[in-house]
Image (cartoon, rainbow, N blue to C red; front, side, top):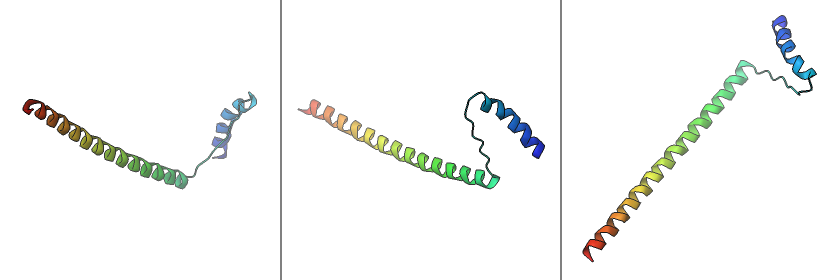
Length: 78
């Protein structure tokens, strides 16, 4: 495992020497799973908001259509 990490670090070192700043960030499997769960919860929340938005837009479109039809009817009857 140490050898594998040294090989990975050797790939990163040329970037550090060339003046680029590099930050190594290691996550444990548990931390990665927790982060994934948080992202999935956020995705569910955003999807619920989008569904609610679509419902509101559909209701407003229906209301607009009703008002337009009423306006057409009064034109024919006036």
